[in-house]
Image (tube, chains in turn brown, purple):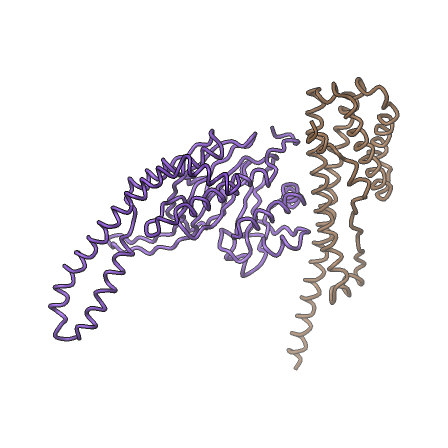
Length: 187
Length: 319
């Protein structure tokens, strides 16, 4: 009888350890996925100064937009920015870059510039990598949230203070704005 | 090309050559049937002489008929020179009609190392046979493909018997991919043999044996395929939402369990077939036109993969 109870307790403990470890792994995957997203956002930030210096010689009437992009980049890369503000700033930056790419249509000489074309290719690549990182992040978050919400791991999650994360949503404006691919298709 | 224009092309360029080949096949077939009958009769005499005292004549006659039938089916093959003539005079013209710069070699296969590297065929493969190699460029995208038969053959030393298993029979297509990538990504049809499939089917996602499973958002895609890659983000970078839809459309077009892998800057696609491809018909020569139309459709579908996957869209850093 005693051995039976002991065996039961050991099994229960093993199950708890298993569920706890699974939640920790999922939480780490979320952090890791966010790190990947962050690295790709940084790649975009690194491309912006080059992009601005290439286009400003041609885009005489878009000075405000270029200044806005520079400011948003500075805010996004600021070490003091909190995560929720960062998401907003990155979204604004994305929209502004989308606007810039649309404006390029009015400058045929710029469109034909080899340096700009190379940058545009890099931007397209980085944008796709950001999109892939976001999907990876959202998948990791969904996995974590499933673990936190489903029975019986929800008890373990509650006891050890695991918190749900929020999936990143693609804004409607963002979907429409970054139109570099369309620009390539037209050219 | 529409059916009508293919028919016009066929009548102008192929019909005469095909008729000539069919005539030769017919002549060969007559000789072959005559030969089979003579051989069967010759073989039947000693069998009959040995068996008539034990069995009824009806049974022996039945055995004889079955024997002729079995032998006929087994030996029925179009001679090599007629096969090659068919490929040169008919298949090559169809391929050149699709694109005059495409190259066709009836003897060549996709290289063995390319098949192994794709990891779409089981690692048990010991023998690879291939033919009907087609290569070329569609706009900016280079491609090549051939019909392949991957086999596992167990041979014993000093023993003539072999144990054979066909692992894959079909078309193996390789094209340059338009994005840079570092890892290998595999898209395997669910419940189909492959390098990872036997274990993955039974035990699910085992990181130490297969590259980890990548769960994608498209439920229809998830029902048909499982994706494996060591880098979750890179797999999603390759398999954008648009690419997922493209692969689903390719699957729908072929109505086959296709497998896809992204390795070494290339995309490899394995399309299984149940019949030998780009071959003339032996028994039903009158059906050759219908078959050619089918070959033409399949060839176009394969070439269209380049368009379906948007492989000519070079908007990323890879030229």
